[in-house]
Amino acid sequence: MPKGLDSIDVRILEGLAVHGPRNMAKLAKELDIPRGTVLSRIERMSSTFFLRLVTTIYHTNLGMKKAVVFAKASPGSEELLFSCLKVNKFYIYLSRVYGLFEGCIGIYIIPVQHTGEFEDFLEEVKKSGVVKEIDLRWSTCFHTVNRTSNWFDDNAKTWAFHWKEWVKEVFSADSELPYTLKDPASFPLKADKTDLFIVKELEKNAAVSLTSIAKKLGASLQNTRYHYEKHVVKNGLVETYQMAMLPFDRATSDMAFFVFRFGDSEKMGKFARTLLDKPFVIILGKILGDSSLVCQVYLPRLELRNFVDALSDLARQDFLLDYQYVLQDLRQGKWSRETIPFEFFKDGSWMYEHSKHVQALHDLLSASN
Image (tube, rainbow, N blue to C red):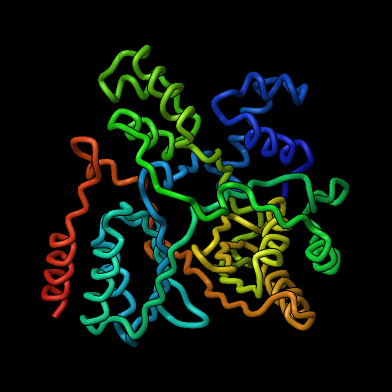
């Protein structure tokens, strides 16, 4: 991994997750570190470890259901498949993948009234012939996992991976899930257009000031603060702040999406709880109505193999029923990330125009022939 990460850096990351990146003064005071030092270390981690301070949105309270799409491309159509999946503007993350299959993974947020139309859109993609198989899984919102001091060796200034201890921890862990990983009873829309504009800006930069947002919005600071405090915060539109970073050397590390399947919800809960403070986990979600989890991880290549060995150990002990994973293609242009589709919110509701998505898909396919 790149040199330079130490225990103070990790403490700053922990503090950012707790207090948020818009409260640097309080963070510096609690850590007993000068504010300038905190800011300079964040800047160094941003350049060395690709640290980004973003806001994770609780899409459930925006009336949206999360879809995870695993798409196996027809040979020769890998790039075209990637483009086809992008024409649906309700995606928030798309990536080329390889390993179990060659193709794409997509994460979409679909207005709950239009989930059937999204499934129809995927059927249109299937009919095109660019894909051999599509596996759609509806998920809870993802639980963001930020870096903690757990598994960090202060003396060696590096991460230590205690896989045997982790396997033991899985059996003894509590099974109670955080609210983000529980099947929601409903998908209420608790936002107006101003709220969504604020949320969109926070997604891009969690440290952005309300003054800056107000200027872009063309509204007063007082009105913007009211919407932020009384709507965005009070209505639970923000899940947490994410300290998105790549803490291991990119040249020798891999990012992967796993699906874990369990025999019952208690085992699933125990497994999930042990991942909430581990340095290799990025996001974790639960498949709706099932004892299964979807998880994005980032690990040094050797440690990824050790992680899979640990999963095999759990399977031998009848704790884990099944696991599958695909590796993500992190080359430039092979992945894309978007904020909430703010431009499709009009007159107090989401405008999901299925026919336009299908037409855009057909236009793209015609142009590719």
